[in-house]
Image 1 (cartoon, each protein chain N blue to C red):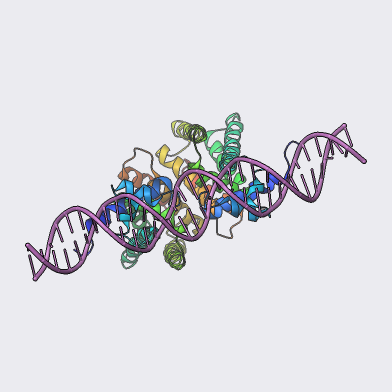
Image 2 (tube, rainbow over the protein chains, first blue to last red; image 1 turned 90 degrees about the vertical axis):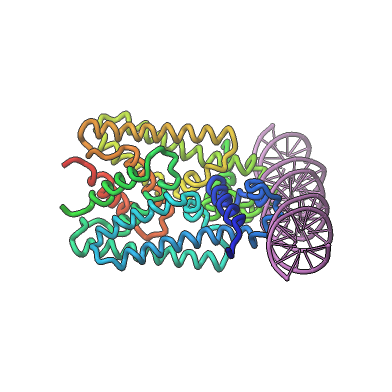
Length: 188
Length: 188
DNA sequence: CTTTGATACGAACGATCATTCGTAAAAAAT
DNA sequence: ATTTTTTACGAATGATCGTTCGTATCAAAG
């Protein structure tokens, strides 16, 4: 038990606050109150406010990188990979959707060098995703859609899953988005 | 000349700062420096920091409401309306994409009663958009896609147009998104 | 029982925040 | 030319920020 339980509680509460109010608008006193502590006590468990954001962002970036790696080593065609990537996004969102939102919206408040580090990881992920799409087009499996636009449309569509103020089930969302963004562009 | 020119300069600079750093992370001193003033001088032109955000958000909300109204009074089918709505989003983004970003990302920092007012306007817009989609499905013009998922996918896809760190032309984006989200779901 | 290490807290630090005020210069109106 | 209005500024206000520090409380280890 290297890490205490309280530390996890703080991180979960922080992710929720960051999602609801934004990183900058969340004070350490807000966070302390959310976990029944005073602000100064937080520092027995964490190093700084930014450390929390950094850890949240990096942990999620890791999830996506790992998922991408795992999908890319499979012997399946690009369309199947895209399907799995969409499932990956939704699964991650479903498992911890507050922290993913911080990851998506609040990363820009990271300081250096974490900011550059994060952006590099993100760019790598997107480049790999784009590569899969381009292969799909080259192989004639996908319609001749603009790869970059297709990529960003997929990624943006994933965003609203997190913000979801709707009452839709994750499975329905998955099916609906696949029908729109996978079946719709697959060559018949 | 009811409104001074300087006021507009301040608003434009503010929109840019809000987009780049976020509303909370932008100080009045930052804004003042951006327009070659001292912070206290800003208050000869504006009432408060929140007034700036409020005006930016409301102005853009107005643009969308007006566009929706204008489209809805035309005698065209739902699919054509959706096409026009996508064009509306891209046109607004193209005309003033910094302020649209503030509108999209920073509205939650509005105080009451502006916040409730804004959310109501937004919900109205989305409800009308959803209605058009449902009509399209009911008339058999659209494939049997989940209306809410389709709506949110369209709206989310519009978001990345604003953030666009890409070098794509607005026309290409328009064509690409239409191919994906309109032609892809239209019944053949 | 004693010692040690982890945890909690109040008080305080310097920094920064949005905003106000009195005042002076500049521009506009008369 | 004189009055009026608009604009800019420095200084100051009280609030809040993230964080530090000394100290007290607590549980576990010896």
